[in-house]
Length: 85
Image (cartoon, rainbow, N blue to C red; front, side, top):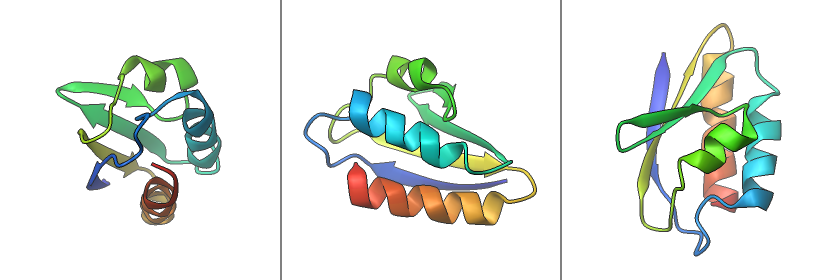
């Protein structure tokens, strides 16, 4: 399992549009991709689960991937987060 921490810089946090794009990115990989905040975690391939975390600007999340393409998944998710959130 690979993981990284990221602090959101987007003033809106994880809202509908970037959440939808994040789900699309996570679905590109076979590995399970999970985003966690304050002890709660969500499957990054499920939009409503992701929105349910209610991540706001300045909050830290832990993104983890586990599976056959976890290295590529973590790299892609990290790039996506930096570029969009």
